Image (cartoon, rainbow, N blue to C red; front, top):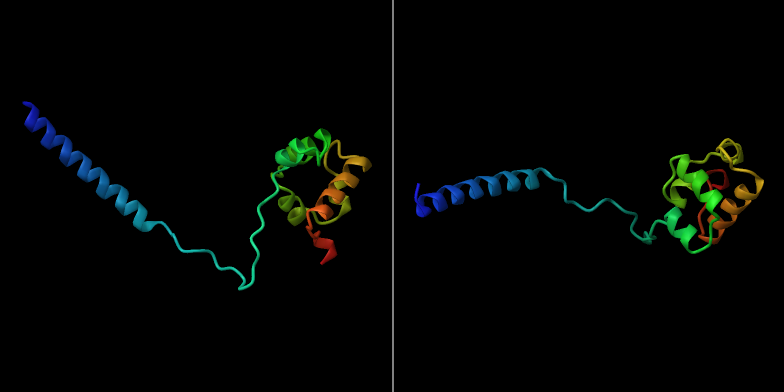
Length: 114
């Protein structure tokens, strides 16, 4: 096979790949999510970022991460009450107080406050 034939084959393969990618992209939902008309965008407060800033202790951060939380918004949304926080391994009274304080400082509302 000479170079010209090889280039033609390569061209055909690339065209087929582009069509396949196009088909996948056409199936993707690119619409914007529905939001309340006056919704304010608030970035998620990642636990590790709070730890690095010194707003959350290493123990509290590790306890929440091990329990499957990634952000303070996640903690506030999933925790149903103080009993839930008490059940998290190694989460003592000091850590619970700290988590409550950080959530309050971030302006987050707990489920039981609503």
